[in-house]
Image (cartoon, rainbow, N blue to C red):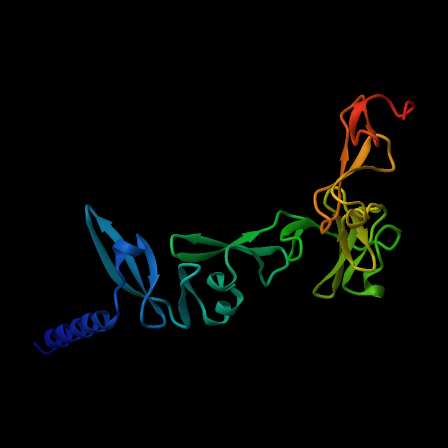
Amino acid sequence: MHSLLFLFGLVGLVIGAIAELKHPDCKQLGIGRHPSSKPGTYIKCSKFGNSYKSVAHKCPHNAIFDGQLKTCVKKAAKKEVPDCEKYGTGLYPAPKPNQYYKCLKNKNFYKAVLHNCREGKIYDKDEKNCVIVKPVDHKDHHHPECEKYGIGRYPGETRDTYYKCSKNGNKYMSARHNCPAGQTYDKDKKTCVGPVYLHNCRESGIGNYRAKKCNQYYHCTSIHRSPKLKTCFRGFIFDKEAMKCVKGTCEDG
């Protein structure tokens, strides 16, 4: 008799504990796991026919529910996950160099998903992408001496490439990068920059003006903006008198 009373009492405590949790509006939030009002617990929403049901669950010992990952995680690991609601959708670095988090948004809720880069690649937080990486070989004169110069960006073998030195534990790594099309690497600014314009729209005003090559011209749309370098169609050259592309060859111009 006493054991039966104890069992009923235990069930009552469990029901009471679950009743204390504030259950979310499953119809609004949708099917899935959602944070509850108590740390270390979560609510699971499910649907049966046209009715929604919410059930309280408890995370394992020394774990808390992560609303972004939608699962229970160790308390120490919680700090590693980016705050997607704060930073917005996109890619963000993870503790391991070959991993990254992708923040997604589903209706009004954010979720961080952990991804792995392919073998031989690491995540670059500046490029926001997985990049090829190789151990620094000092016999290869193209690669900078990362141990000597330290972490950072350094010019590559061509004007539109650069190398980025990083460190993984006690090991230095060098990754090769290409600048976007039409840009070159500026070693002073330590970034890729656009082409240097030889034409000043503020001085010439709005219009078309011949460039260095006979089949190219600068197009000024505003005195407050840099000109756009444009190329005539094949078989055409830019006529500075007509201020437009006309039929001809560079020998004619």
